[in-house]
Image (tube, rainbow, N blue to C red; front, side, top):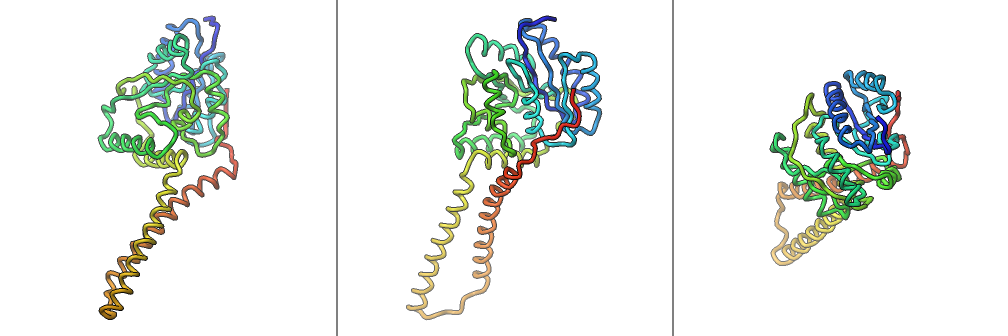
Length: 312
């Protein structure tokens, strides 16, 4: 098939041996519906422990001109896989998609129309329902978006996926941000550009199991808050100020009471409780500051975001 333009698709993969062939077959059907563009695939193996890399090799051998892959030396995380794929992608337009088909490939046609006909720089997918997800995960996801949009100046759209189609200037702007602690949803919002969101209902995985546990998602959300908001540091400062103010009031009360009524024998349980409370607040504030310092520590070491063991 000859085409005038290239559309690169970046696909991060971790233990996705079952979904890769299904994804490729589905995407080839989508490519047939956009004859003006030829899709180039950039699969990124994020240190998978199954036959993910073997599936990539087989696809690349069948179509070496359009199928490319990178394999990491170990698991570096999805953010690093996204960055590596964007570094490698050469197309005039670049899409980021999950291989499990929870990102509906047919939306790619509407995304392309949004860029070609409506002059958008980026068209992204936004999930408006979470059917099939555990209720506790859905609840905390909604709370996360509410919280981060209140404490951060960078807009992060509730339900927005990494699935999006971007023009080359948008991709280049994202690649210019080389920070070690990456939170792509925030980076997409921070770079700006004219963006349109396509809404869709949640889609179940086509095969396999997700590698995102509740704990991993919780840690990821904390990284997002620390990366795009200084509000937790303000909380630590206010906790310290309020604790000082309350302790000063209590000290004045004790002095006045002793001057008026004498010095009664104080009870140790109340003192122990106060010490524990103050100590807990101090540890909380140290933990918040420590999280930011830890991120600074990782940044200044300037280690590579990923290491590629094999690529084609």
